[in-house]
Image (cartoon, rainbow, N blue to C red; front, side):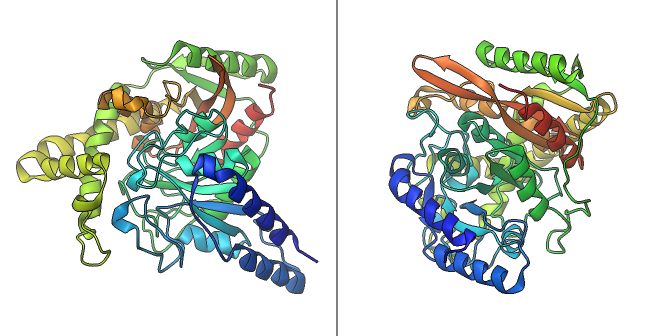
Length: 443
């Protein structure tokens, strides 16, 4: 008789085989998934202990190392690289009886906001076919939204989890900086990256986060944290952050949601301002260009088969060349160090804000997901602006979550819109407790 893990794995493998040709969320399906699931079932049957993730099937973004699986970062550069070890987050998932179903598509080396920049083809938005799913964790959000796995592990450097979660109508969490070990993550920007969960609801996202969070001697930035447990947040004081450039239809969905929160939950809300936040995008890309350039120096063709500059796509090359220029001695002090200063200013402003409010609410993405291919007509400034509302949380090191908040009708499309909730660094449990209360209100 099949155990729960095997039943679930078998069901998801069927769904992927039938449905993912149209979505392209998976780059690799684990050929040992059923064997892994059977072993978990047998171990549970013999020992009686069920891990926290028993019966859960999990996809993994292709920049997180899983032993024996192709970890390409959706790039020709690493096409032939197979993981030689498990990232700490993967070790913890396996220790709690989670089944790894496969490796998920993304923008190449996590450089993108749309899901169109994978070397192995773009990912479709399963909720609105023909439109982008958002990026860079396109496959993670799409796979969860399409019902190909229970949850997914992804990475968020400037919105790469929250952006696609908003577009695909799922829950995506960017943990506090230091909450989750980055060991085994192929980094985009080491001072900003965080591994986090994508799931269909807040409870499942919190479950996965509780498994992967905590101190790791292999990552010196990780923190000792209390277990992630959700509880009644009580009365919440909301800071409402309004920024320029948000589509009126999106802002209307968010305003209506906050009005409903005030009415039903009796929480207070007041508008706040964060100084220097208008400099967030420029600051972010300076840091990312320099740190990404530094990180990619290992891909010189000696160990991984291909030199990155000779095998990567346009956006990756743009960031490498930009980082190279900024890193030159005559520029580094002028630009990179100033970007670090602004980063600290923004962090300080958020800390001041959280002395007055429990959380901040705002949209996740300022624009609706465009139709696949439309980005060819857009400027880089317009494309980069898609992360304008998510980047500040990464610069400040705070936690953020996107939860489904409603839809915008455009033509025949009902397009999901996410509400972003931010809390101070280390207040991930509080943030998710607030998010669950909001989630339980009818849309």
